[in-house]
Length: 254
Image (cartoon, rainbow, N blue to C red):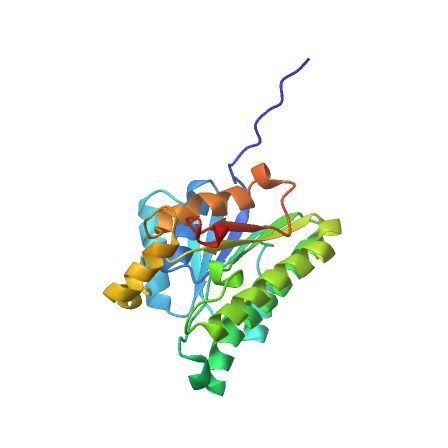
């Protein structure tokens, strides 16, 4: 009897595209994938931020390049993705939030959140998948969703709606793309301490409420998301598709 062999977590030789990769969870994803051997391309709006991050990665001996790209511009996305070698890994990390009470939601807030969180996720994925299918290459698509794609929260109606939609998108994509050996999954973090969450988590009452919901008793860190990203991108997750990997400290367990 031969022993089973542990699947590898290495990503050597694979190309990865990370949207929103200059800060927060996107930056963590870019570092984690590069550290696992992938050649990473970071897409974000601001060229200066991209250059700084790419230089930091290069200084650490990691392979990375960047592109200044408005990922809500579908034609620009298609032109970029169509002009480079196919990406076998895509992390859709770019996102936004505009929190307000339900009665105060505006059409502008709705459009801004849905266009980026859902629309860009869909159409960037579409462009990447088209190249993979044409090249007959397998792939792993990872949407950075949220625990708010599984539960609601106060003043988060539009944000939660966008993330619930991303969860449905991932499952539908997984069904369609399985025949092409393209896996589609989501990572669903709880509140992660980043520049973007610093303000709301600085409110003592809100912070206390958040901590009361997280069973492990602490806020999330960017490092908590890096391992799950590498797992879903790697051969270790070869039979994982249409799944939601909740990294929420137990928030959704009740």
